Image 1 (cartoon, rainbow, N blue to C red):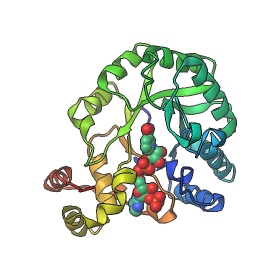
Image 2 (tube, protein in one colour; image 1 turned 45 degrees about the vertical axis):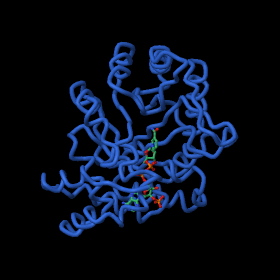
Image 3 (cartoon, protein in one colour; image 1 turned 30 degrees about the vertical axis):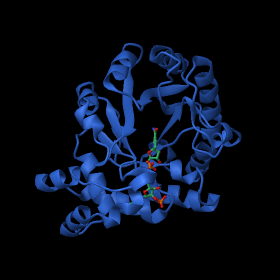
Length: 281
Ligand SMILES: NC(=O)c1ccc[n+]([C@@H]2O[C@H](COP(=O)([O-])OP(=O)(O)OC[C@H]3O[C@@H](n4cnc5c(N)ncnc54)[C@H](OP(=O)(O)O)[C@@H]3O)[C@@H](O)[C@H]2O)c1
């Protein structure tokens, strides 16, 4: 299990995809996160706008870390296995493509070894054993320190574990998407001491703007003098000691607010109410 100082990391995606802030604004968000004590930044080679822009988010993080005194204490997690032709999101987790992507990520992150490299998604045309096998070779060569998976189910986790030591699983988890609490992924991770990185923990692009309109969330937020975003994050963190939430932020205010969720412990009746919230698209 990978342990981080804070159970909340920074999700880098909104800094580099469509609608992204200017570079100085993006660097200021990363700097603010570091000042708040964030020691995990999640990125991916494909957090960018197209194949011509691959590595945008990784380069931003490298730039921000160059200015940061304690950069050895900050852990950067990136991913390989997707591509962005014409801005679309497509899969390519063939061993050769993963190796090339890893080489590019090393360059973009300006590092000799990637702290955590995650298979972004299982490619339906490539057995997971082949993709993870290439990650294992990259690890043996010293280019990757730890291996993680993303968007996986229990069977895929078990198959990958036969090939390499899996340190993290990164899946979507929030009150509106709790499948990993029901399908055994959260339990499997705890059993094998795998850190679970909850992505889109405040609902992702689809829901985050509507949180302030949910009566139950607002009611609970009022009770604890917190924001609905903090309620969502505290809910994710309540799922176990192995859970780390990685909320995205393109604004300093967002990550500043999110970090305050670390101080929140929700009563069980409020956790139940949050788990039952519904939103209309
Ligand atoms: N592995 C995968 O397939 C995958 C998929 C999606 C995401 N991810 C990772 O997970 C991270 C988070 O997911 P996400 O960005 O999709 O969704 P999210 O964490 O649910 O955040 C969505 C938006 O909510 C806003 N927000 C977050 N915390 C807030 C707060 N405390 N107060 C007010 N607004 C807040 C931010 O808006 P502003 O931009 O306005 O600050 C953010 O862009 C990504 O950045 C990425 O690193 C991984």
